[in-house]
Length: 222
Image 1 (cartoon, rainbow, N blue to C red):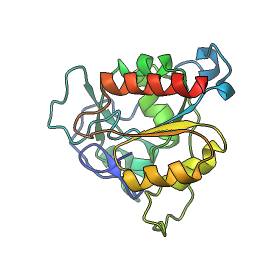
Image 2: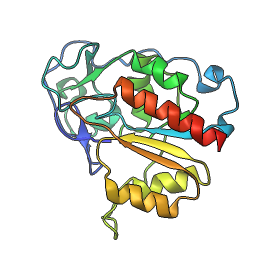
Image 3: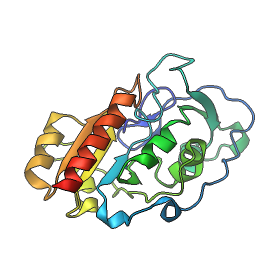
Image 4: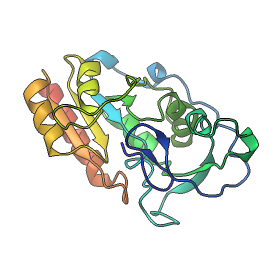
């Protein structure tokens, strides 16, 4: 995930890093969509998992404003961001500016995969991100704390996502992990994996969704 840069969150899990002056409405989260189970046509347990980072794949925070075509800017004050300003009145906390493309929600739900939030937004992803994309409430990976450097130099999410998935195959969309993480997963995870690194200045693109669908269909047929 990323989570650093304007409108993103620190990749070390310390919370959002970039801030822009916001507009009114940042204090109010959008209404939630129906529960995920209502959107499924086949049992989730038979699907590969799709671990979704927010900043980078969904929020291309490294792109100069106004951002890619189709994106809308939103002002947000998620709880995990407000906690970065202890003692400051809520009204004085500067909001995050987050850019989202509402077309991404339906495209994610059309994939033959079970989507799971894998982001430092954690529960705030269901409150603040999902509704803008038309996503229902999704499962959330809860990260261990405190976070320490990995002895093998892996991204801090890699081992935790493998453990969370158990023996299920999974794809992971994020802007930070690299070849070392891919090699480790190939060697140690007991099922198929796809690590899809997304350019944080571009966000998810049509070719990424095509690759995810192709991989999921191939994995389910194996």
